[in-house]
Length: 548
Image (cartoon, rainbow, N blue to C red; front, top):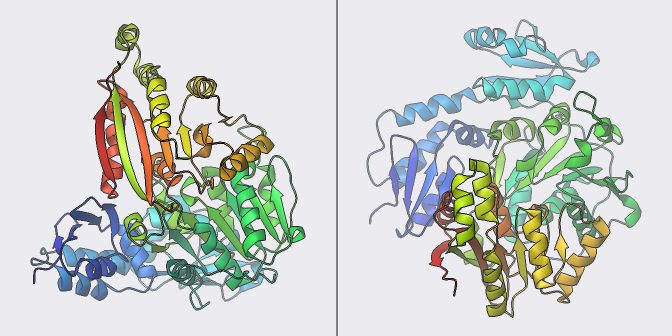
């Protein structure tokens, strides 16, 4: 029987999904390899330093990796590749972060047995002001715990942090009677672990619509402690609060909202990244960082952790003694700061591909279609003579897209539809044309909630939304999305927008249309998004629209 895995010397793994043992092989390599592409026949995984350190933090050894590769490899494993894996994994654990023997001054210790490594760390300029040399390594202040870990991983030395975590103030959190899905329970257990050193923090990667909030509440019920939840916007704050009231026995008095609208604190507090990272001027302090010290928190949940703003990295670095949970549909950060998430929030503890949950019926099957149209004649010369950024806007705001939106809505009169775009003038025009509600960043929160509720009840079938709806918006009945413009081919945005319609439907299919002006820069950016969706295994077709 032919084996499913082809291992290449550039550290990519090609998985032939048609082999009988493909699923078994995938389960074996997922702990130490990152999924990059999952189209119809061959899935591509890549082994990176970060993926190997994730594996090492979960207890895997180089011999575990080697065994999995050899067991499922169709051909001989390339010479030298195994030695490289062993070298990288061996770096994890060479530096231990532990509680200092003399903890009266709130200090930690870096324990380093290897003298050469100690010398290397001693000569890292970025660490000079944080570390004090000792006989066994270095001493550091408790407040610098995260900063030191981040600088060490940048230098190629992922720190094994086994210093104690604070328990936080007790809070009885019990779930109401509902049955979590098997993968949600597995994900929660992967973070909480046995409660020993090295557990209680990490990142869970699950597709949009698969119930990441449920995982968060499961972990809350297991730890039973005061919890601070950070998320992307006020609508997401309200969704968290509604879910907590619906699925746990927490009372309204035990849950607080900390946003621009309301700044209250309770045993469970839900806040936005925006309010936390706000400051009156670019050189001033962040006044709302005080929230992190308002109570004896035992758990901090970072919703959509791939969007964690850079200023919050700073305060997150100070919170290393608190249990931390990151929730996300993708670890892709457009700023390339994945290593910061690893060192400050924690390593990836669990993930599952979108297609796996789709095949089991937990999320809807998505059909993605790109519709290409021409620019109207009166815009071709302005487009040709425009600056690059203006070219994109002219193409994105192609007025002929309005005709296609009208036609698509008319042809799908049984669907609940989101029309999503980037530019406010375009969205205002569409909302007026369709005579439907519009939600943008300027829409008051109370009005947003009213529109969302009308959509959920079926009183409104179509809404036009700006990029504020990319994240953490729960519209379970949305079955179709029409993307009229986007953010320059952002993979992250594409994943989130598709996620708005992936909640399972009775008919299973979700429809995702992208409108693209042909022979323009918008077509080039759309190719990035198309590639991303195809790599994730979604059916993607291109149609040409003729203006009649």
